[in-house]
Image (cartoon, rainbow, N blue to C red; front, top):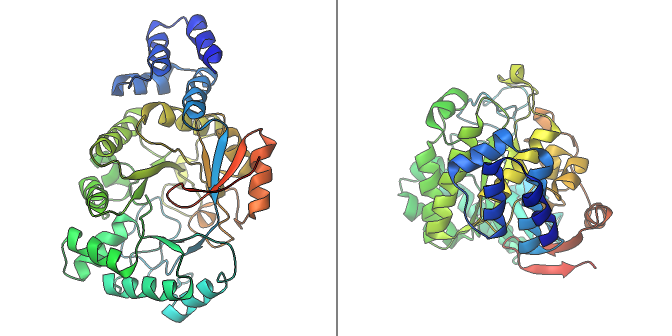
Length: 374
């Protein structure tokens, strides 16, 4: 590992890039300008070498996954984000709205399976508040008491808490009392306010997203962080986004992982943009790993980028590929993701990881090791 990065340092002619590589070797933080430089000037081999050096230093060859399933209670949403292929209005063709018993039927189907997490996200429904979803969590845990409930993006939380006429802190404490264990990272999209106004102008602000996650950390609810990349944002916007996350992680230490989410172009109002290629995906993972020095984990969400790219990403700083999913998410399949019926068994995930000479490790949501596959 050290010999690889030494070779990169010795062979790099660009002085600025060489200095970045030396910083990485010495475990020093890079600046925003250096992050932008990596995007603009570094080739993929250079980025991969630096990102993999950090990844191996943190985790060796261990690659994490979990046994999870998704519940999407509704795709009815008050917002109309331009990048979204998922949203429907009440009564519109393609809309769904599961009642509580239907949701609990899904949970019952996993009662005797070795799952550790249920991931719950969906549209921002105009008639459902914090107490509706809190009751749902309670009922889920009656069926599978040990299940970790990771639920609700900051955008969903903003609406449901306001609808219940509580402050953000009061609402999060109440949800924790109901049984909420952690929150996912969705809804971050891109923090640059001008770009955000173009792609999701109705949605909760960048400041509010960060404040909700900060408050969650303060009341003992860990969370994930995301970015939506590959649309109209620039490299500067991506680094600005990561800088805000890095600053918050310095303050709270409450983020479990960072998940770059690729813009998918089918069936939405940004389809004309197209999609970035796999090289850009790998570059983005690598720069994320290099820049976010205080995040323990970088995750590649395999249903979104496909199994082959997920395998490649493990050489570009990624150490986690999410979980079994079990064909229970539509958010990306409706937007044209690689896997239209996303499901993999734990055996298939283990094989996928071993195929690229990494060590599969089953984890729980907060990265306690459940089982290591040698």
